Image 1 (cartoon, helix red, strand yellow):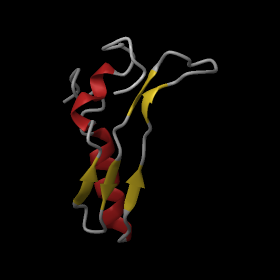
Image 2 (cartoon, rainbow, N blue to C red):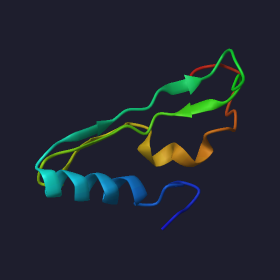
Image 3 (tube, one colour):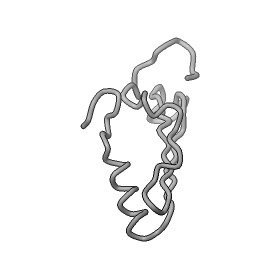
Image 4 (cartoon, helix red, strand yellow):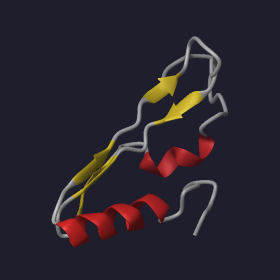
Length: 82
């Protein structure tokens, strides 16, 4: 289910698990955390929703901000940190 707290629903998790089980591999997808300070995406917040899945499809780790992935472009304070 896609919600404001989980905009991807289980999309990444399902895809990673299927590939890991099918090929017996681990997959790690990483994402930055914080505000983009320059370039065409300046002012946008990077989501920080990293995910690691093992060869049996088990979740090895989820980024600390996984639960906050829905607020990617809304400043929560005037600082540039999360």
